[in-house]
Each structure stands twice: as structure tokens, then as C-alpha cells.
Picture (cartoon, rainbow, N blue to C red):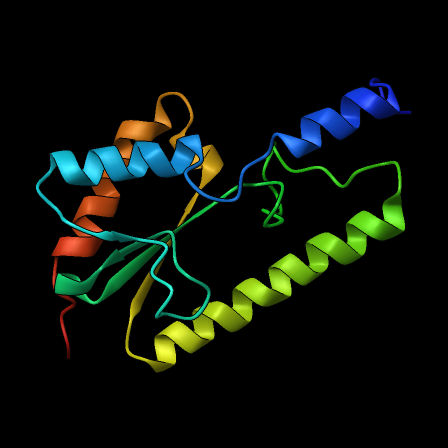
Length: 142
């Protein structure tokens, strides 16, 4: 059973943004502070990636654990009310992510996914440092 009234739940959901979320801002501020320059939500690329680093031919997708179905994450839980709606909605989000990532890779873009949970607490610094290295280090070709 939902702990919120229908009106409260509706208001809460209406306040959720699709762009410029706190996790996105955290990643962007870190990258900018490290000297990396990027574009936000570039409409020329499939799916309008959150962060585009043309110099490194890399895109960063900052995914919310709930909205992008981060299986196994303690922050993701299938809703218990209006189950059919949410199952369809979240499954479609996940399917769209797969298509978007594949389209970017076919255009030779490196795709890095950062999950919201990776930016919480003590994990944040470690994940951001790893992200910087993933972006700036050239892959070794054998």
C-alpha cells in the first residue's frame, strides 16, 4: 500500500526532472573541474546523451536507478501499485536505453554509464575518479 495520498504522489512525480538532475550536475561539475569540456544533451546524437565529450568521442549517461531499472541495486524496487503501468513504463525505458547505446556504439562513440547509486556517499569520489580515467585513457588495442 502506498504511504502517500494520490495527490501527494502525483505532486512528487511531477517534480522529477529529465535533465539537469543532481547526479548529472555532480558529474558535470567534477569533469569541468578536471579540465574536461563537454556538451549537454546533444540533440545530434541518438538519445541526446547527458554528457558528450567530442575530444574523446565519449558520451556519459547518468542513469537514475529507478527510472532505468538498475537490477540488484538497493535503490531500485518495482512499484507495488499500478503494477502493469510501471512494468510497461520501466521496461520500455530499459529497452530504449539498449537501442540508444547500440546506436551510439555503431557511430563509434564510447559509452559510459554512471548509475545514481554510484554517486552516493563514500562511493562518489572513487566513481568520479574512475570515470575520469575511463574518459581520458586511450584503450590499448592488442
